[in-house]
Image 1 (spheres, rainbow, N blue to C red):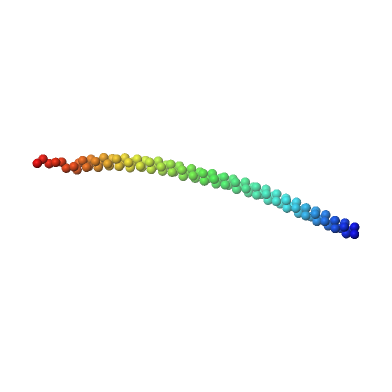
Image 2: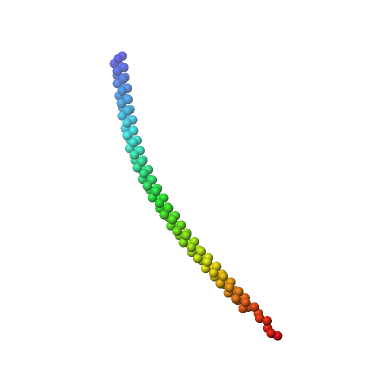
Length: 105
């Protein structure tokens, strides 16, 4: 009976050591995977930051173009308004010229 107990105890200890070794290997593998994930996340973060910088630069370019377009539209508006004013003055002159003068009878 004592030999059976000792044999069973030996099997239990062997099984515990085997499972512990497997657990340690799993933990080591998880640590390497976590380290790789951290590197991947750091790389993704730098790529995203670079992408955001490119998008911000593009927005700045678009805003600069919009500002230039607004200046051009303002210039065009002023030119059209001046032209309208000048044409209005010319129309006024033309109307004055078309007014028939009373003929002396």
